[in-house]
Image 1 (cartoon, rainbow, N blue to C red):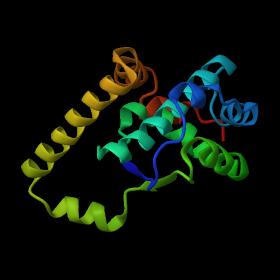
Image 2: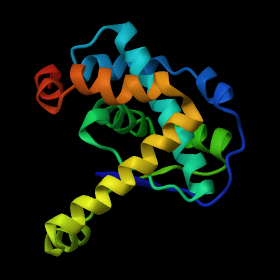
Image 3: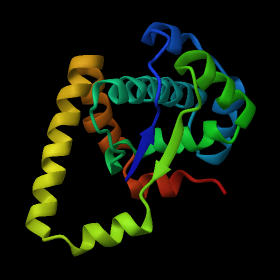
Length: 166
């Protein structure tokens, strides 16, 4: 599970973010995963939506987490970050500063493991419920279904692993 940190407000609309194109990002993703150009472009588009949503969520005080269902978006995000100059420029232009990707830390995993499992599950259910509601409100039902049903079925962790070319 990962989260994001960003301290300033978003400086652009979702439509502006979606206009951004970078064929090098999608090309590298196609080389890393056995997906078509159309698939890579679609996943990159959804990743840009996720990044915009993360910037919005920090303004609104909503916690977002990357779950297995949207692991393919997280993989594309990792891929985009590798183009450091492009990613930095993208973040600066659209969000006003660098959008950090913050994986779960060892300390956080240890603390979570020490919590009562029932309490931990209840906390995660609450986070996910708030997150799904937020995604629905900001991006609509179609995006929520795409990420948590279609992508969840199509890009399971096992299938993503089998798509890796390296």
